[in-house]
Length: 243
Length: 311
Picture 1 (cartoon, chains in turn cyan, purple):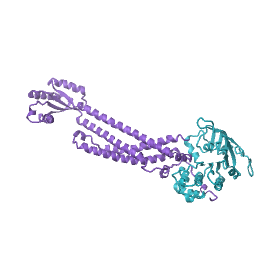
Picture 2: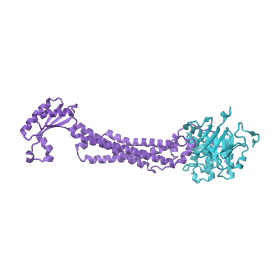
Picture 3: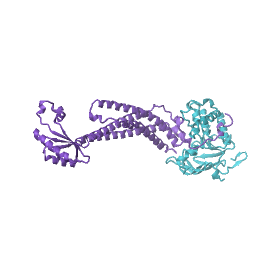
Picture 4: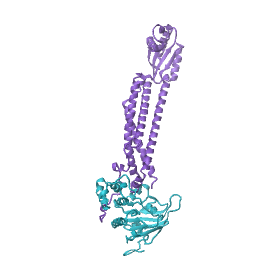
């Protein structure tokens, strides 16, 4: 199997600009493979969120090539994009929960969008809420949840449909270190089940807690490759990633 | 938190399955009848029913008048000398009976003419002193046109220079023209109301889109298709339009029944020709259905146009 065939995401010389401004991302090229755990780091304003927006298909690049799940995203008809989005899970930096829906309904949303029957989703959604420690808050609206609870609902929503790739933008930014570690373990569990995980963070303490992870570093819109994450096959040691 | 994610053991069908029904509708946090849309649609439908009812009544009135008087004409012989007038009438009647353009002929008795003129001339000795015209009612063949009537008038003028033929349709023409104009105005009013209704739904849909932009973007990013999101708005507007449409139909039909009662009290033969038939009422009952279809289609197009701006 070639690298191109097995890649879950492939960026080729991608650039992104908003309007007529200068590019916020320039010459971004990388490949993400199934079952890997990636961290995307960089200072605030480096372009992490912009890169993630491209990954979860909220934006199309201004230039360059982009493939996801083997399909060319650039030339793909707009009507086919929802099918790709359903194969992803996204944890937004600001959670983006639906205010008037309960925690249960927020977590159930991806399943309902995918056409899962009500009788089939009740059990998994309740189990997922239990798993993130919010079983007792299933009926609570987001406004009545704490920041950490909202973040856990957002994460539960992102993983409930068993995505092939999970994209998380600063997922531990609003929780205490203990909860951050728990959420990280959740992502690792998901990763062990085969999901490719991409976590954007500038918390190096967190990165060190996942020794097998690969790191992509953004600096002023350009990408560097401190761990060989962007090469194929990724350069790794038996004990972890070679720095 | 337990160690293993519980829901991850089963993969989800990720086809573009429909996302409909009450669960989908709950994405929009709206209170039924809370917004202005049902009331706007109710007013639009009530006015449209009223205008359509008026247009149908005018159409019936015109058809009735045209049917009653179609192909009929009256010969009027004005002559002060009673004997001469009677002689002229007799000779003209004889001529017309032979004419293929005339299918029926009736000499109107002088007593009937006096009765017709009684509202203006009164009765008794005074009217007896006034020379009344002799009238001959004609039913003409369908193919008789104005030119044929003129030719006929020229021929009878040889017997009575003062005689003239009045086609009923000729004097009715301005009335029919007025009725036709009113019908067109009613139709134009219906078109304007439909346009105003579309504009109201368009504004309401855009307003709902603006108010729920975050929710829509979330559903969009979770893989919701444009059609799925549009169907949520369609369902919402469908319920609003149904409620508004039925209310409007009741209001409009009530107004028509009230007006019909008032016109019936006039006891005029011509007005009676403008009553609505069962088919007309069925057409009026279709107005809210058209309103619902237009509202749902407008909402769908508005939402889809807005969603196309998203990737």
